[in-house]
Image 1 (tube, rainbow, N blue to C red):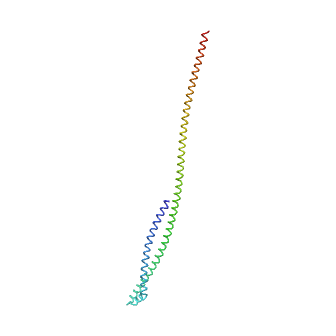
Image 2 (cartoon, helix red, strand yellow; image 1 turned 90 degrees about the horizontal axis):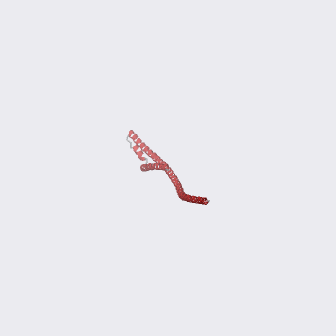
Amino acid sequence: METTKKKITAKEDEISKKEDELLIAQVDEDNQYEDMKKRIKYMYEKGDSSYLNLLLEARSLSELLNRAEYVSKISEYDRKMLDQYVATKESIADSKKKLETEKAELQEMKTQTEAKQDSVQLLLNEKNKELQNVNAQIGEKSAQAKAYEDDIKAQEAKIVQMEAEIKKKEAEEAAKKAAEEAARKAAAAGKTNNSTAKG
């Protein structure tokens, strides 16, 4: 997209230059057209007789040749001006056509770039939504994992407490049995002593 934008900027610069050239060419065309109008008006008002009178009024052969050359140069200048006028008009027409083509290409490039931008933005929005969903799921899973962890710790604490209680009971049972055994042995020893004393 950045490359396309740079191309568009370059194309706009080219078009701007061409528009300047076109403006200058238009001014030249207008000037040439005004000169042509003046010359045609003069020729129409004076007619070809002005050139003929110019030649007939020559006092010598050399003057006649000079005047003939002068008339020839004026005609040649008119021809050149006409050719230039036609060439300028054709150049302007070509420039206009190229300019319109370039503008159309530029517009197409802009449209394509905007479409790409819209497409990328849409994709970006979708990916952001997906990312938010994933983050939400991660959050939920983390919360669940934390809850499981807390539950496991609570269960482990209960197990430790139960083990402690079992050990305590076992110790109490063992002490009770030992006391009973000791009492039984003492009682048995007492009976034995009593039998021996009687005999």
